[in-house]
Length: 123
Image (cartoon, rainbow, N blue to C red; front, side):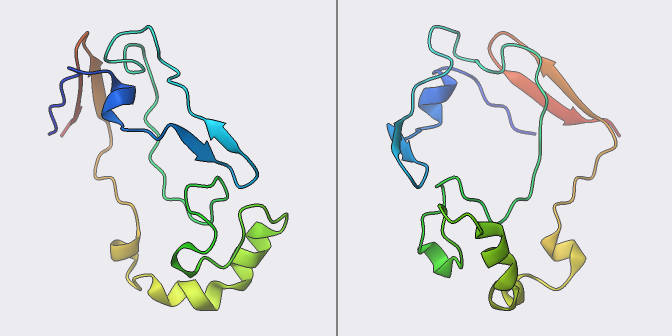
């Protein structure tokens, strides 16, 4: 279990950059939780989304990084990614167990406190 105390604002803890690029323009990254407590956005009920994602075009993986076979601004980025499967697929583990995101829990429980979030699995 991780015990993470919110002694500084979450946005500060995240060490987010001052700006981000979405492949077409530079965007100032403002703190969306300014004026709220250190635990924001976890100071209200929330959903935890776990995701394994590939082929993004949001700028977090710049064009040319790691031999990425598509361009973020391309209108056919998804097609370019699919067409390059022979290039990237061999780098994936062949065992489903090794390449899958596995969550060994039927029920996860979250308890929100004023200063921290606790998460644990019911067995």
